[in-house]
Length: 131
Image (cartoon, rainbow, N blue to C red; front, side):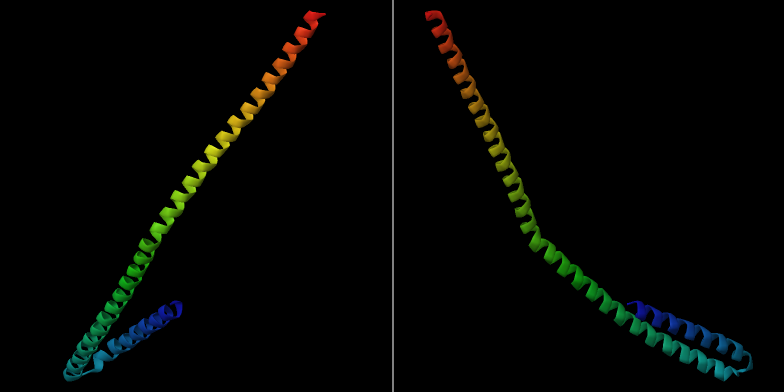
């Protein structure tokens, strides 16, 4: 693309220089030569306009095609992305519930150990009383 832009810039420069030369020569030209110059310029301008329109249509077609392809890809993959997000959220919820269950089980184990300790203390107290 960069080379294409450079080439177009060179063409613009060449045309500008050619026009500058024609303007300088214009003072020595006859009326008929100026009319021919005008006709040639109009014909060239019409041809360039048609060429420009064809290129514009081609570029618009390519742009539209690329946009449609990108849109189609996005639409096709949006469902997959949404599913992946939903699955990740579900996994996070499952992980959170599993961690909550783990905490509660750890608490239950601690409670049982605490209850056992209390039973040991109670048994020791009974033994002390019997003495």
